[in-house]
Image 1 (cartoon, rainbow over the protein chains, first blue to last red):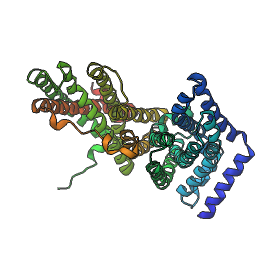
Image 2 (image 1 turned 60 degrees about the horizontal axis):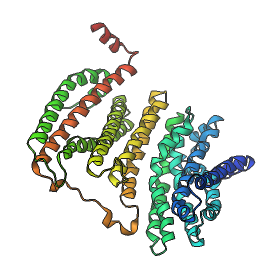
Image 3 (image 1 turned 120 degrees about the vertical axis):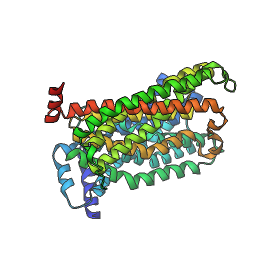
Image 4 (image 1 turned 60 degrees about the vertical axis):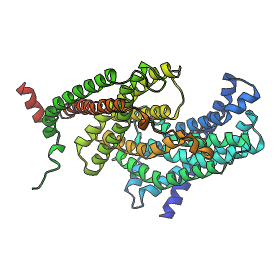
Length: 223
Length: 246
């Protein structure tokens, strides 16, 4: 079971590395969205610092939903997904491998590029540290909840826009506490621990339940 | 006596039953809503705490807001029944409930905007209750959008059922996160329910109107489900015979 998990993870990463542009489109989408906000709002330092947590998180949310379609679409198109459904391995484990690969390719790059966004918005070094940490905890949750949406809308016309309609409302808790933590870090005198604990609790819940829900959705969509 | 629980899970036997129930629920709805509104408009004080006549929108606003929440649970219950027993009727009930629920949510937001404008001087505020109602509307819309995007009925029923269940699982978390965006000072942010402080006449009128809203929703959902049955079962013989009778 663990072997198949690793094999699938390796395969997905390898496939993505052979076609690197997919990774970079998500990354650049994030950077562009983050860079466009100051042009539309203001270049003032105080304003930028005020909007930074929300802007970075909303950009991450959008980038994540944008990339969701890709989790299963290619495998569905060439029939690999059907074979996965037929294997004796538990589908939720395979789904989890695919989701993890997807996060490594689309979520992790966002975490690594986040300091750049922090500099654009004049955040202090410690705030940037918090920013990276909450993104590190939060983006896997986005990928896992999003995978359910991607599985449900598999192969539908206009699936990309539909999936954002379905999953964006479900992302709200991560958005609220993710940006809340950054705001608290900027104030300096507030304890950050509750934010981390809540986000980690969401992460654990998502780890337990979303692979099952995604597997059930895939079975419905592919049957 | 053995009860056949599944007798009415077939569209052909539920269709006439729904037809018989609709007038009953509709009559009850009209009586209860008219009665409740009469009581609420003419037998209650003109002032509620510091609000004048305009507080009377409460009868529509609170009733529709409650319906919006309850109907989501009803919808998920039907969806779960469908997933467990694989009965087509349950899915049809779920999708009929979704639309009424979305309308009730929109109604509560709309009446709330009017009430807010008169009492707070603003159409919209990012108050926790308003925000969670707005997100409830988004969840309904997602459900309806997913259902109408999938052409195959069987897949659309089951996919939207899973979505509704996931939505219900996350709703408490969303609600909590909106109510308490700063976990460091959560206790002070919780709003208390103000029902106990309201005068009993107003409360009674409100509850009667709410019961009327329930009946109205039952009636409308059954009407809608009859339409869905006819659409989906249009190829069957019993629907054809229905045509002939008329």
